[in-house]
Image (tube, rainbow, N blue to C red; front, side, top):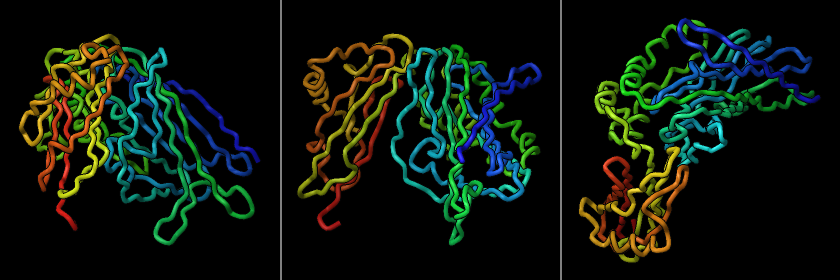
Amino acid sequence: MKRIILALVITAAMTGVTQAKVDLVTLPSRDTQESLTGSFRLEKEVYCVGEPIFAVFEVVNNQEETFSFDVGGDYRGTLYHHRFSVVIKNKAGRDFTNPPRGHLGGIGTFVTLKPGEKYRQYVLLSSRAHILPPGDYVVEIGRTLSSGLFGNRVVKASRTLDNDSKTAAATIRGKLHFTVKPYDFKKLKKALAALGREDRKARESVKRFSIRPVNWALSDVSRKFEMGLSSATENLRAEVIRHLPKKWDDRYYLEAHLDYNRNWLTESEPEEYTLTFTILNNSNKRLESGVLGSRVYVDGEELKEWKNILRRALKDKKAKCIAAGAAMKFSHRFNTYVKEKGKHEIVWQVNDIASKKVALTVRGDGQ
């Protein structure tokens, strides 16, 4: 039997705020009756530059049997959940989604919904991209509720499809629209102060609830504005608000990446160690890249040869400016600067705003 998916669009209104449209997907059971309803929505349609953006994911079990699916455990080593597929594009079709940069796994768990129960989870969409410039955006988002093992027990994540009791994953997809307005210090400050304050009320309508990762969102704002604050920082909300820029600087749109081919070397016969330097222009206009005036520090000491390295690496490139949406990338071998046994830190300072660092360990033989 072919699976039929009905897509409905619902518009709701809130006092003083227009709630974003909902993409509602209903998956029928074997007898074509509703078994599971899933949806994605945004809490509002307009944000300012730098503001955290959450999608609300909801699942309702409409069938007479319990329904279980896997959650959690998929964020270690990254800034976002891997179980949600997210693509963020502007009205012109330019993709702003950052590619995954590593995944360390994690301990997952399962949510079981009884008949009629609802599950809600908040997905931090803005962690999938750097600072989004003003404009209109569309988000394609999906989530597969997959079967799996919980201890020694097989958990069925959707209805039975045939007489052999085989199960198939249930996939919920949505398309969301929102607008980003220019940077506004007062509005962003107000939004961060209110972040998560109404979540307790939101929990009353659901039986299973995944709390909004407020500290995660605040850490993401800190990362984008180069504040150096993490989720472990005491009074994180107040510190992030205190460090917000009062005035906008287009250099905040420049995103630096420092990638490496390995994170450890052997002292006596060091392996090849290469760093790749990348600068992205996430704005809507041409900007000075800042690369020619950048600096590199190895264990706190400025690398004197860096200007010559840049001259050789960029001799055939127009490095001063970078077009909107473009990336500038070059690599260099760093074995010469990290020979001694122990831990090393390399920092690439592009300007007063964009910087990146990596850590490296040089081991002795036999370790």
